[in-house]
Length: 84
Image 1 (cartoon, rainbow, N blue to C red):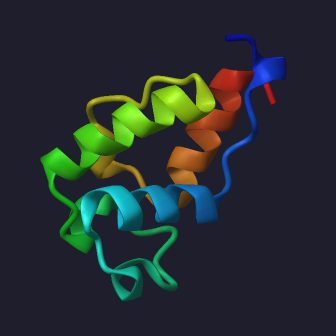
Image 2: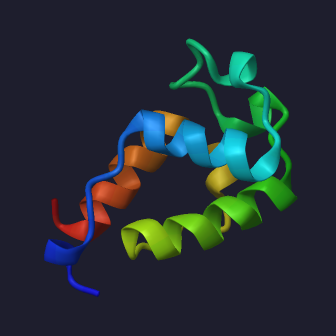
């Protein structure tokens, strides 16, 4: 998959993945786009699911240390790797 075949990630995309696929409560993420996922009580299993969905949707492998990243940090990471 090339970068022209993928869409740029947004904070809403990452939040939607976390809510829809991992059971993170929307209110946990609201207003916390710059807070590390670990500080929002997102667990390692949720990160594994995020990694799988992000790889399919964006064509980018999310790093294993994603718990230390924020939603906005993940957006930047994904978009930089796509060459967007």
